[in-house]
Image (cartoon, rainbow, N blue to C red; front, side):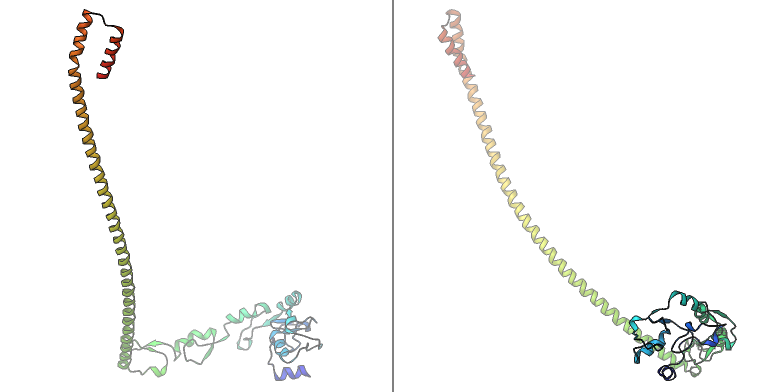
Length: 300
């Protein structure tokens, strides 16, 4: 009784209608709750199968299998076993648009893709505010004559007519409105551009101030280095002058020594001549000869 009452009160049909199928359908491929062919099936550990929507709705108020009353929870539900899933997918059924003229019958696993493209499927008109639903094969012919189709004003103002109530619009008012919108949009763009330029200028100004500070610091460092270099250069120049003076003094002393040696050699010529004469006249002793050589070496 619970299952029957649940079907009548809570559920509309969730599975595939039996009348759509071609040939015999095994009872094992039927939902235990809605008694239609399984749609998005789940299987319990007790091997009973249900439509996903059916079993989810059942377990909101119950915690047992609707067939054998064994404990059942969403966590133990699993997809249909492979063999039953293959049998289910091989079933042949008619398109849901059969009453409108579609004669296609295909397998269960491909029926959804067919119905999405079926020419007899009713789809809403793409024009805004149009409440009409037409078959896919008649959509183009409806859109061409649809009173809600979009089109431009025949007077050339550029207004897009969305429905019959817009057909008698005021072109001057529309143009004024469009002008006001353009002016408002332009003002907004100008304000945005102004703020952007101001922001860029502020950023550039901050960058220039920072750069100027860094350059000023570099200049101060260069001035300090130049001051040190000038001080070092003055020290080197003073050292060079001192060395030059010392060299001039040494050169002067050298010339004086050479002059003294020259005068000394000139003065020593007379004793040597006299000694030579004495040598011719009288032989020198060995001691006198050694003294004479020592004197000559000292003079040289």
